[in-house]
Image (cartoon, rainbow, N blue to C red):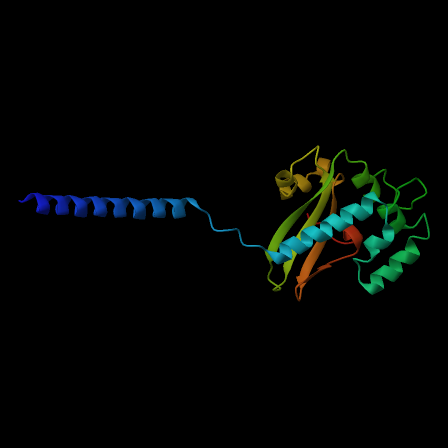
Length: 192
């Protein structure tokens, strides 16, 4: 083989090797990158709602909470809140011996505001048999449990934890979250 042919052969092999290295590096770089996470607009929306609810409870802003209810519930509960001995007032604002259903338990406001680190977690139940997506909002003391722990049905349904957590179930209808029941599942079935 002549010197020119040998140099040309070396250049070809070198070029091929360099090309192969570039291709391999490109694939390894692309392989190491993760696709950006998909955003779940509905889940983002329910998180925003939970933040507003938590803020309203901590500020004791009953009117802000009532805005999350449907109009018929809103009117009924506005009236009930005027009577400090009504079951609804005792359930939401302040539980005291004058309450007919007083069991020594805390109201929603007392439960959430007495937490050292008030927080919320969203338990996305996904689309159910009726075709609607559901989510359970759990308001709790983050100094006692992590968001992952509090989302566990075994945890929040446990008798020793149940009264330390406030619940509210929402359903996605036409792209908007609406409560399934009264404020904080008042007078409705528990999520347990």
